[in-house]
Image 1 (cartoon, rainbow, N blue to C red):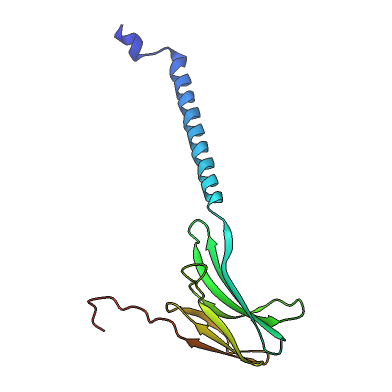
Image 2 (cartoon, one colour; image 1 turned 120 degrees about the horizontal axis):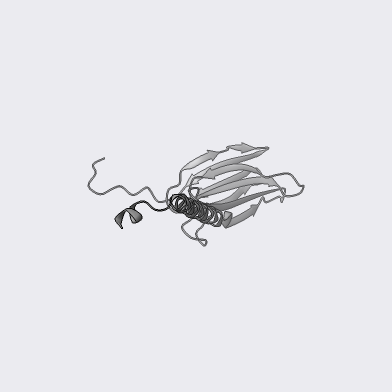
Length: 161
């Protein structure tokens, strides 16, 4: 009797292997589909979380600032950009300042834009210290200055400087 169970009929082993192959293929396909769905659902694109604008005293220029939060699997980042453009016309704005971080919340401003004259824009950095990725000093006839009034980077305790 033991020989009957150890040696199943000739076609039985082949059928069992095909069934196992089919189940493995289905399981792999389901896991792949699930992974693709998770990846797609985690990509929400970019979202503006803060914005502000300031018009020049003569009304010819407009400075805009916005914080953008990129999201997605492994691509999440927050950055703030300041742009300058003519107030009339359809030209694209020109980036004049880029910060590697953004505000901690939607109500926190990281950059204050202040026109000192029609040809001088002052950008005031506020909050915690930011890393400047790009800074322009002049655009067309507008001088651009940056004043940093942000909090200094906190020193780690117990480390001598």
